[in-house]
Image (cartoon, rainbow, N blue to C red):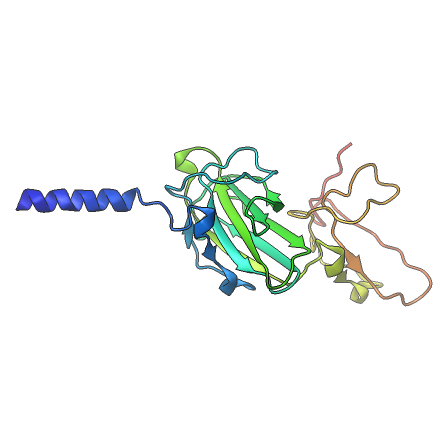
Length: 232
């Protein structure tokens, strides 16, 4: 009897240890509509023991490797998805993130791994409210890189897009705080400036209401004002 119980325990433990995530496949995507404008719990999801299906994000440098799937019903025409990892939010390493149309194969936005435990973000303006969209999460090839992560969703358009431009009228004849704004995780929209030698690349948007017939705008970077670099 002892040997039988030991055998049953071993089988049960092995099954649990090698179980795939419930959302291992596109068809079994977890509905995360309830966390729009919220976040999941820390380490709520995992790529551990997941397998590959459908496509990799166009920005990803490998994959699909261990991608898992989520879905949401759009509440506005915008969605931002943030993947957070690193203690206590998760232990996944070198993550990938992508946003997809309802078919799970037409990409809307994707983000490549940045660092070992670096958070990722994708967003898209142009969704149709009431339509279901999909999210896939993956990580770099290597069993040791698989692990847990946290998701946050927001349907409030931000200054990554013209439509979400930050109103800086309150800064007229003043300055923002040092390092108040960032191009990290930004994507391109609209046109580049005529004097720019590339772009748009990672443009952000601001707006103001004119108080006179003149306006000077200064962008300051370099410690302590910011870390945005100029490459020549």
